Amino acid sequence: MPRYSRSNDYVECIVHPMYGARKWKLPMQWVEYPIKKNDSGTIFKRTSWFVRLLLEGEVFSEFNFRETYRHLLAIPPAYAVRKPHDPRVAGLVHALQDRCAKEQEHNRCCDSANMLRCQWIKNPSFLMIQVKAWVKKDCREEFTALWGTIIGSIVKNQIETVHEA
Image 1: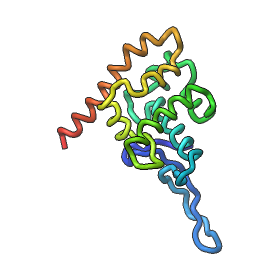
Image 2 (image 1 turned 120 degrees about the vertical axis):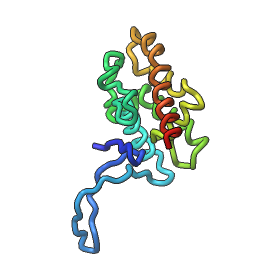
Image 3 (image 1 turned 180 degrees about the horizontal axis):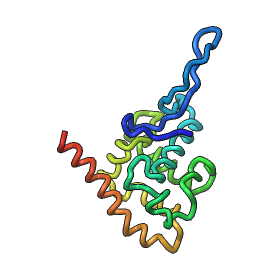
Image 4 (image 1 turned 60 degrees about the vertical axis):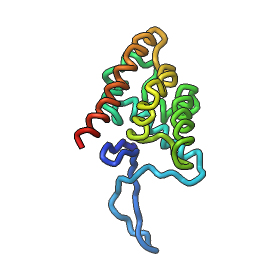
């Protein structure tokens, strides 16, 4: 199962490398989740894993909908990779891809803590509507009230880190 590497700031997965013409097996390695150039399928899969890991609090501990805000969600974060055709999943994945594709290199999407934090510095409500679609209808007011606190904490931590360096 892929994981988020905070030290490298990307989604990574395990590969089983082989060497030489005889394809000698080498030890398994964790590597950056690959994106094939001009392949929207691999970009969608990588971004889907980023969404899952984001909602589970692996990218930002403050953004933990697996434990801290579990009571708010109508569907679990795992749906991001299990149900790619669900409108809530597609909406969140496409929002990350569309916003950052305009500002970043071609074939790159908003799939790192740094890229997402930069988006939230510019626009604190970025992704709020898409994440709100994951929230139970009777909890949406509570979610809206929490959003500013969560994003403010993430942005504040970045600003404090920059000032310390």
